[in-house]
Image (cartoon, rainbow, N blue to C red; front, side):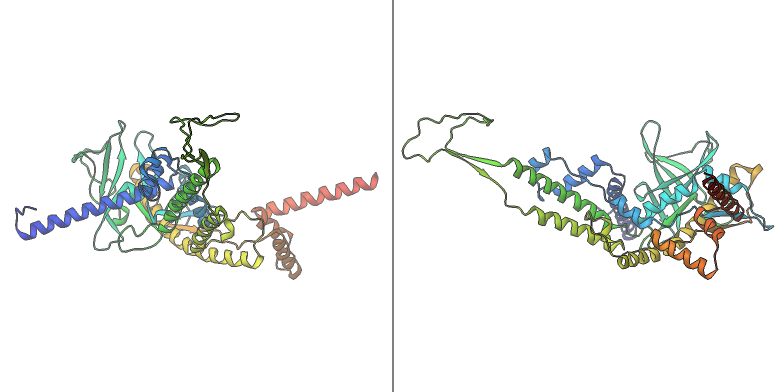
Length: 460
C-alpha cells in the first residue's frame, strides 16, 4: 500500500476501512439470518448451495438438486414468546392532573401498537435486536410503526455503546433504487449514490424532533434488545439459525440418498448397450458375439447400505437438543403419541414462566420508550391535539399462569368455593373476563332459565 500522508492519517484511514469491512460483514450475516426468518426459499437455496459445495454435494449435483426446507424457526420462537400476551396489556397516559387521557386507546389501536410490539418481540428473539421506527406518512397524514431488522440499518453510538446517536436505514425508492435514510439528533436526509437529498417536505434536512425534551426521543427509533453484547447489536440467536441450516442440509442429503436407493444404480458388465439405453417392462436385450474368454454379460444392482432409522433418530436428537437449550420441552417437537408426565410438564412450564417474566421487564422498558417517541411524533404533526408532554405512561400486563388442565382448574375452583374466598360470581368474572355486574346478570339469567325448564318438565 502506498502511504501518501503522515502516519496518523494513514492509521486512521486503515481503521476506517476496517470498520467499513466489518460493517459489511455484519450486514451480510444478518441478511442470511433474514432470509431464513422470512422463509425466502430462493435466497435460502443460494445460501445452502454455498454451504454444501463439495461438502457433501459436488458442483454437478448442485445444478439439479432441489433443497428440502422445513421451517422450524417460527415454531421455536412461537413457543418461546407464547404466554406473555394472553391478554393485551392495559396502556394509559396519566395526565399531569392525574386523570387518564382517553385518546390513547384509539391512537394505539389505529397504529396497531400491540401487534407491532408482538412482531418486534418475535424478531428480537431471533435477531437479538430490532428497531421500531415511528413513521409519519405525509400523504395519508397517519402514523405507522415499521419493525426493522439489523440487515436493514446501520447504527452509530457515542461513549455508551448501547445507545445510538445516529442511524441509517436502507430503503427502496419507487423505481427500485436503493438509498439510505439518515437520522441524527439534528439532521435528517436521504443518501443516494453518495449525495445528500432532502426528504419530502424537509428541504433544510433537519430532524423535526430535535426539540424533544430527552435526546433519546429525538430519534424516532426504539430498540428492543434481548441480550446485551460487546457492541450495539449483540449476538443473534446462532443456536436456532445454525440448527435450521443444518436441518435443511441433512434433510436434503437424506432425501437424495433415499431416492437413489429407491431407484437403485445399475452396473452393466460387457453388455454393449448404446449410450442412454434403458430398460422397461417386457424388454428383451440380445447380446451377441460373446467370446469364450470374455466376461459373462450381466447387470448388477448397487444399493447403499444405509441405516435410515438411525439417521432420522439422529436428526430428531439434534432437534430436541436445540429445543432443550432454549428452555423448551423436547416433547414440543415429538411425533410420538406417548404423553409427557404431568410433573415434567409442570417443570417445563415453570422454566418458561420464569423466562417470560424476564421478557416482560424487557418489553415494559421497550414499550415505555416507544410510547414516548410516539407522543413526540404525534405532537409535532398535531399541534392542535397534543398529548400531555408532562404525563406519564402506565402499562399493566395480565398475570401469566402456569399450564393448567381443565381438571386442575376445576379442582382449584372447587377449593376456592369450599374455603369461601370465591363464589360463582368471582369465577364467572375470571373465566369470562367480564365485570361483576355482567357476571351477576348472566348467573341470574341462567338460573331463571334452568328453573323455568324444570317447571316445564314437572308439568309434562
